[in-house]
Amino acid sequence: MPTYESQISLILRWTHQGEQLTIRDQILLERVANGQASDEQFRELERLYQYVDQHQSAPRDWLFGLSGLEITPDGLVLFEGTVVQVYHQDGNELPPALEMFTRDILYPACMLAREYGYRHLSPHRISFFVNELFGTFPLRAISQRTYLFKESMIAPAATSELGFLNGHAVCHRRGESLFQPFLRLDSGFFYCERFLTVSEFESVEPGTWRIYLPEEKKDAAIDLPRLG
Image (cartoon, rainbow, N blue to C red; front, top):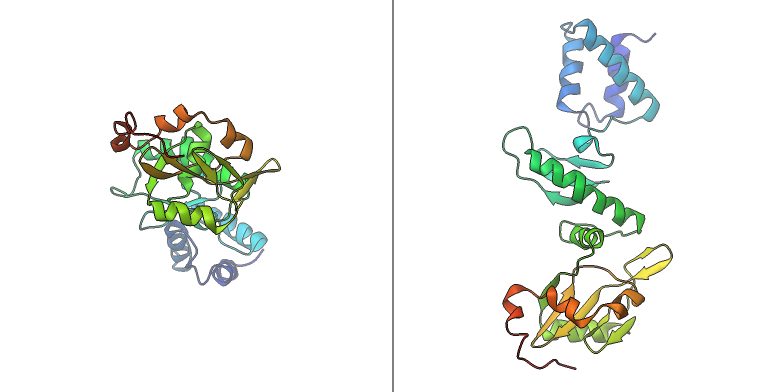
């Protein structure tokens, strides 16, 4: 069996001199190296050594045990290395409500994005997959100039009297391409914070879009004529 010194040496070699280890594991190595470890800590060292020797990397400290999800000391939440959320920590532990949100909403949305092959996740873009999970169609206001630019930049994948699907497929679901919708409703221009297939876009009723108008636009939508 390798000596404790050789185990520590291998662990340090494969973890950038311990920089990739958790604080707990860094303290563990320090206690073993200084001859201050308990029997249980020596067993922990053996488990750490076996993992690093097999994987040639540090074990990952997954957020709430959810594989692929990590949090940095400054509160950045990463999914497979990409920032998807920011949590403002109060002390060393996250509030139970954040754990519930992570398990029930954030992590499923991340897994959905991975399933669809989406490559550009961010704290802003994760909401597209949250809306996919819940079947919602939130609209965000844009300028007419932006709307017309998006419409002319590439031939739309689909059009209707209320708008179009941007012609660039952003990801795929079970072989179908998903696109970003852009709408012109009454006096405003919007993008939809959810990706849709052509058939889904064509089947959305006008009244459904209006349900998701930003609050300040809903009253105005009653009397103003539709652009089309």
